[in-house]
Amino acid sequence: MANSLHTYVMSMFKIPARFCNDLRALVSQFWWGHEERKRGIYWVPWRKLTQPKAMGGMGFRDFALFNLALLGKQAWRLVTNPESLWAHILRTKYYPNGDFMTTGLGCNPSYAWQGIFKARSVLVGGLRRKIGDGLSTRVWTDAWIPHTQSGRVLSPCSPGRENMLVAELLMESGGGWKSDELAALFLPFEQSRIANIRASPNSSHDEWYWQLKKDGSYTVKSARACWGVV
Image 1 (cartoon, rainbow, N blue to C red):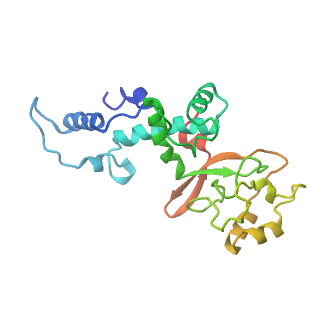
Image 2 (tube, rainbow, N blue to C red; image 1 turned 90 degrees about the vertical axis):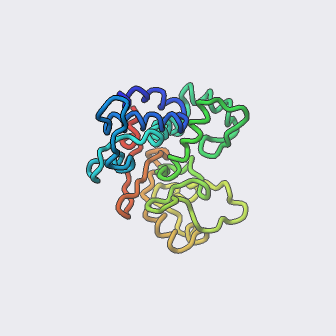
Image 3 (cartoon, rainbow, N blue to C red; image 1 turned 45 degrees about the horizontal axis):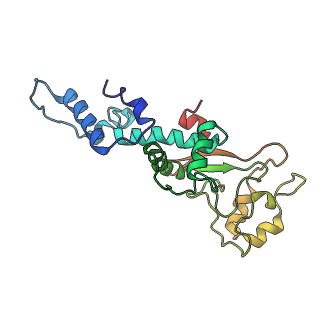
């Protein structure tokens, strides 16, 4: 029960750390306690219990991290479905001239918005742009380079090209990348990385996807599979 009753609230609000600690204490007391009003011996530390069963743990939830993950799903919906009604409301109030991934907290933020804003940090590590026509991805500020830690271009930005779109690097015929532009703007190692990206300028728009790092290698998954968005 302690593992499930809080789920709805945690998906909407950032729960105070003290409340998460109280939940953890209840679960621990139930697991280790053996007599009413008497504290049992905690034979295994909580961090061990919250590890996945495949790693020798019990798979218990770390309530603070679980809370952040649920709020991360709300943040993901803001990024991937910006035309929804609630995204329009939040954008109008908190970032009318920007976007969710770059905006600040704003003035007099609601408690719900504070939680979603804090969960934005969950997205930053793995959120990437899949290049289609390149019309909604910025070369120098968006994360669009696959199989790298940050996903962002490391080559120095040329003066006057701060807002350059990836579409400007693609051939209009859909035949690939402009090799002369790549050579002029990017360092050699980045030229090869970009040239290996299979863009689809004539068939699709840019999309978001989720890049996970596992065992030292990068694994690409759709964000729908990672976040369980329906």
